[in-house]
Image 1 (cartoon, rainbow, N blue to C red):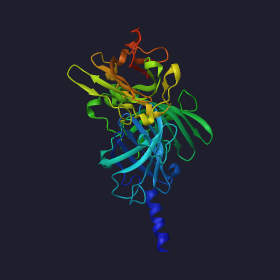
Image 2 (cartoon, one colour; image 1 turned 30 degrees about the vertical axis):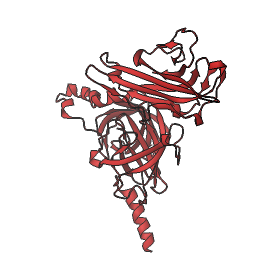
Image 3 (spheres, rainbow, N blue to C red; image 1 turned 30 degrees about the horizontal axis):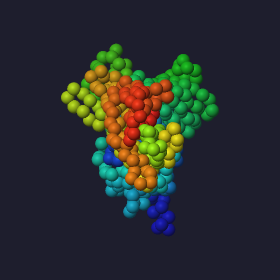
Image 4 (cartoon, rainbow, N blue to C red; image 1 turned 90 degrees about the horizontal axis):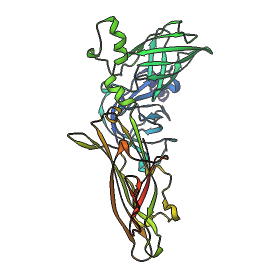
Length: 424
């Protein structure tokens, strides 16, 4: 009987409290994340977990396996993926107190659950702050809202918002961070309507209708858990005529610069050696690295890749050499291991006084009978904004090429080149 009472009390606590001990800001190997747990009988699956991802994206999901896991979707500001977190050893679930670190997995098409590949392990290393430290600027719509038309529960992935409209229907909408407007549709007992909300931090002003004219009336709301960044008085106006401008400009310094970053994708495709000595064409191995560097008048700094991956797209020994593939060189497997993604602030990318260099270095060697061949180290630096890729976004770097253009140096032994795809 005591056990039944304990189980009931635990379940009741999961569903009666809006937030948990695990709410807060966390440091991870992929950047900072905010997490808020909202629980209740009215929530889909009994509750949701959500927050900002690095201030440039969103992380949204729910607990699973009796609170032992968090599963869902993240958006890094450019692409959507899946994730799973596991409650740490010694804790029965994420509603236990004292949780400061835990591990999980991630991926783009799958969450790679239980993967031991370090590229897909998401480590939450420490807790930087509690629930009061959560001030979301990108995942601003997730959570429960108490509105003039009944409560709604929303989940935001990127700028896509879906959710539950009370007990009568659903919401499907898109958020525009520039205008601070959420527009979309809702259903009410099977009947379709239209909505538009204007974001005001932890509240919104809106309207609805059965047609796109939105003549049904007002639809205003207040966030149940007020964990969005407050629009400060410096960005508001005492004039009613300027109030609409305040709504448009709220959080502009955070949202506009981060919600639409410039995404750069760098992918290693092929390795090719120069004319082999005595027509020997060996299997290839070695290192290939990529650095993207932000350069201003007074400083320079490296741009970290998504997931803070190593700059070495290839770092192999002769035991893991690529098989020689004829005139096409040695093709590199189509794997995330050989791809790097970077998110660059649109403001910096469009600033003429900010330069971005991409430094490509390779040192390829050939595995043959006898002493292995050394094709020498090669480095070339490009202006990333104007890098001369071809129509397929490809560029050769190294032997017989300079600044992306073919140069006939004649026969050169002990040289190599690599082929990249660079998408801007």
